[in-house]
Length: 563
Image 1 (spheres, helix red, strand yellow):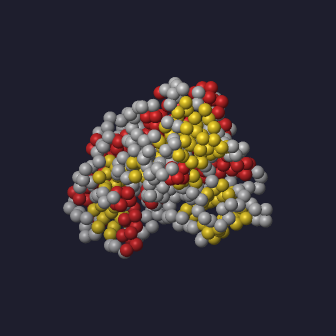
Image 2 (tube, rainbow, N blue to C red):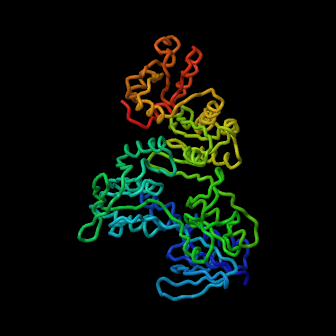
């Protein structure tokens, strides 16, 4: 036999590492140790099993041709030994031995290795909430969790579900629960949903869509206790904003790296948790590799060390590890933090740095809010997407994007992610030769338009305020005029600003009615998406107005109340 490879973890990174290593070396002795029963399943597909889109949870463990990836599959198809229902208890780095125990029989054994892979994944974080151990209180971490939740949803009389946490997992599960006929309440401690992915104005855009689909949102709300009945079943969630009836509770407040095995073995870990690896995915011990949700990694745009647990990343880690186990020289350069999700008819994606990330890092950034149809506006299936694009004012390099709407989001996120990986500027992105035909994109793609707006801002041509800045000015009592340049019919369709300092002059009449706009006040123009708002700014400046700006994103990205 060849070299001995032991892989701890049998879900994503582990099987990928082992399979790649086998393809690199047909003679290696490869063993996967997995504490659970099931192997190599698509954890990111669990919400879609709960919704019914995936009919059988077994499909999440199958290959593309319908073969279940179980112990027999790994042995017959790949000559990989799998010890499932087996817990790796400790690693002796001097002896190069992993001590394991069968969780069902209690039988213990030692596995010698030449190279070891730690793919121990992440674990759900469950806050110390009283009542968290009641029946029908779940996390969503594995297939067994999903099956248990599915069973509760299937029983008559269970109508009220509470999701504790408004992050990615909580939002992905929300649609599944609503689809299955449950009343859903999301309780989020911070001031918005998806607080780690999106900033306020973008989250607010998505929140309106969730509410329109019957979801109750309780942001800025803290869970105090989970109550149950005499039988030990949950029946209410107690918050600082009142009690919520609950037949089912899903705690989805985040994931933590499962790094205990590494810590006990004396490997280097990050101060906030997560195994530290280099670009070859080696730990501080050159004979031990680590990947997937148990590691921290480099964020390529800002250079930070981050913890971003994603199945796509775990699989890419696995390929690099499998190559290097057999003497290869592959490297993993880092991540951009790209993520995407679906919530009813809306798609929501982000990549790179946020505006807050830039401020925390001392980066002078320029942002824009741009909303427009994802296809040619005349094409019948065109749907809007809102983009927040972020760039470095000094270097003009693209730093990040957040995109939400019912239109096509993923390809724009991927364009930005690719551009950032090669250090592109907004000028580069604005001149990309992107594909065009009316069924697929507008002639000037949404990303192209957003990049051009940022260019205009950096060059001093476009002067804008965010919706939050406009609201803050009004709250302070600043003396300014809002200039609404939409057509009359749009006011009823899209809503009006709730203040009396608004003048309505359609853009086509602005030149003839210019005297209706006071010259001695600050003017903030806007329209549906603020393209005409920008045109109004330039028109007024041409007439000698000195203090004119437009409102980013227009009325469609206004996150507050309207008339």
